[in-house]
Image 1 (cartoon, rainbow, N blue to C red):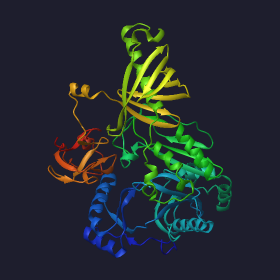
Image 2: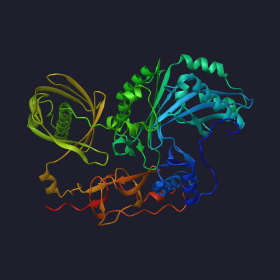
Image 3: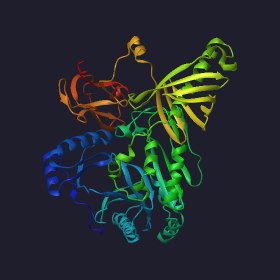
Image 4: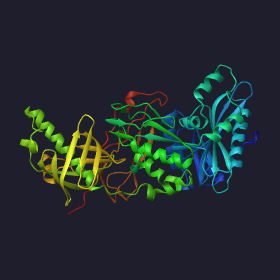
Length: 569
């Protein structure tokens, strides 16, 4: 690449993989450095070593994840730019010597070094730099006699305005629909044309003319994961799924429908949502509106998080970088108060569901009777919001439902009273319509045993019905307050503590693997470890071959991993 005039980032790309030697190379380059698997992709097998003290630990973690994902743990060591943007150029080349750039994509909004938002054109990029990126990408492809679709990836330094060649992916990528939106071209069709020996359908000038008239496109990757728990992946059945209406400017690429299972053995991406607007501002607004219409229940998703990104002032201004999430953590993860009406809707659905169960059991048409006849009695419900691991965020919130007539109720939520509320539950559509004294509210509600997922006014709420403490004690329910629970089905890779150890909040406890991704589970509190519930699992003998028995010892979500000593008194 250097000979072709493509700027390259300083680093070590050699065959010597001795950890001590790699550390020496890192010290020559200068910290921080980026450790990256040669066979890597999707952010897997990639870690940042900020200083010499953390180098070996980060190297071990990157190698372990690379072996698991790719069956190869050979690493590159490169200079890590502290305020980088990830900008890539889609190129196409044919056997006749033609090579074109179909615009660039900014993929800087990332977590775990994996992209979650991509857009084109890249915001706040000078036109001269944009043209130079395209030219260098084409030079990189021509230098190796490339044919077909390719993605040339660059690291752009926000501080200096310089950019460096990072890698070239010899394929279309997950985010290629963004380029299709701004060019109006089917890139899979282009692949077929090139493979058959044909010439590229458009030349560079024609492509640039297309891009100048088609506005701005953004893609959001919708994952089964919990952003509030460091984006750990989730798995389970999609008990409900409603998608936004699609059009020429709103596209959804998905491999899942309601009822499908998101497996713990594969990548947790559920879908890609791609929108196009006349300009970047309208594209962001369209994306936010579509995300508000997306409803998925059964697994935790990043949809609520993506909506927060869309309304963050820095993102709206185009001030993006790969450290965007960490830099804006306070606003992106701010706690929001759940309105009393949400709890009221949860209680009403629970009330109607209980009425239906009694009707089915008795064989009588109880619901049609004034005041629900035999079931016309006051009901108390207790709810709390929940995390992915089932632990409560806050609560409980107590809701009293008093039937005063057919489908009419007085409702009290933690002391706030609503009189003469009328409500209708359409079980087939899972739609609850309620007329409060001050507003009408429509909620789609999915019920899974004692858990409720409520979609209301473009927001999602996850609630859990809880029994009074005396009921739990009477039933012998174990107190999990002093346990660290598995946030998802997982395998224990490493245990970092021992029984009797004193730990501080955020200290590493165990390292787990799920969906071929390593996650460090950290202590939620200061304390003393009383018991390790699970030990390290046994690795597969051949990481190149998927073996079902590798997952036979998976811990279930909600399983205790580590227990703390309970404080005396």
